[in-house]
Length: 378
Image 1: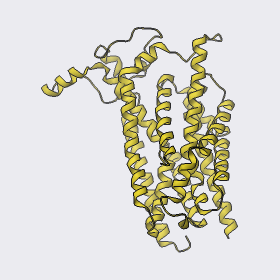
Image 2: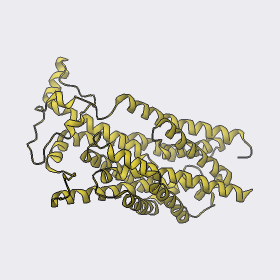
Image 3: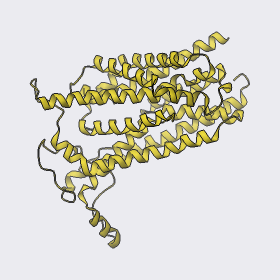
């Protein structure tokens, strides 16, 4: 029976890592593949290497948190570990059905919390710290990118280009393409640091597998997903760059990857997808506010008059309308019609995504509690 459970647990862990690799590779290397800076095979190879590096270094802190600090390691029986991994796998399945990237970290923590509540062993101080960062990290992501969108983005877009018009590439364009690949590697490192624990932390906590063998197993599964199903996500992200220009994508990747890497270093399991989404929202909102100066906004607040639309709407053309080396209009001098011609993100879709991110770990925690409370075999 134990051998069967172990095989099932390892299979579910591989399934989780496989799906993480499939989704994260497109996010990390979509801009690089879309700009022809690297091939899909090259992207998969780098994703595998850097995800494994992230998991083996910073990611071990997250494995230890999820495998023994939220609840004691004594609660991670093999059956309990397989059950927790089942909830993570189910979340991935549900997210695929709805077309929304679920937060595997939040779902896994929810399942572990359900186990802790059912057994009366949850460490609320650790759980409170994790949930606090779940609230703070997206706010930081939003405001950092909002400030970049308002004050820096137009200048960066006017001075740098990442797409070559033909076979011949200038030194500047080559450097830009190298930068795209390097940032993709950084994103892969961050994905490995935050997601390896989602695949193997319960098994490591149960003592069914060692820490570093678990990291290797998860890293290998991520690599398998990178070389197979990630080809579709690379196509989607790579050919959809008109919806998110390369410069904007790189800013989102750098800020979100930095936030998650720092949290992982501190042993906090957090969602890369949530931070990246809030970076996109913040970048769009900040860029849209360039039509209004602070003094104009203050005057409007006093008089009650509307100054401009600052709901986060941002046209794709506005993000890419600056010619390299061209002059950037000052704040308050931007053309409102251009900035609000379309949306960089769909508010309704964003709301649906955030709602599912809240509901998925909540459902995971509740279902986990019911299973561990009322199913004797578990």
